[in-house]
Length: 178
Image 1: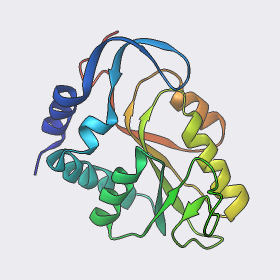
Image 2: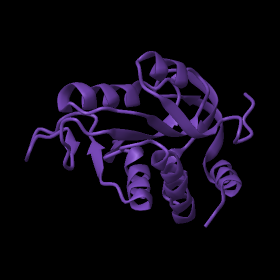
Image 3: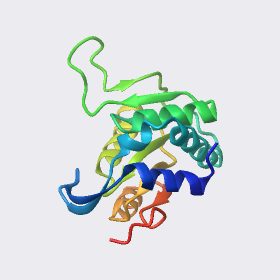
């Protein structure tokens, strides 16, 4: 299995794109980290699962993990396998057919659920998910853990909303000095 430094190198190698990009937040950037290019690589995904497990296992009493559609799904799956903890999947919005759920998987009020995120820029999507889990499902979110912190305000926004934030890597770790 890849070690932390090798994972960092592999992510930069396969997913760091240079050019002109518009981010989900609407911001413009000279680089883009394409999460689908690293979350579809088995060696990277396996190692990320282990790295997430180290952080998750250090948090007392975690009952389950959560990941958001679409980029967080392979990551939370890898983390669930590595920790042995069940996962829930959060849709961007409720589906309008079948069970009409926004959340897939079992969840119980009062549980501690760690949110696993792909790339955190401003933290907007994962903050919505954290609030949804607390307000709609009555769980505690002891931490939000991102794969990569772009160091563009996510930490500050997430912590200002009352959540603990951590990341496996920062843009600096990946050699990005924009």
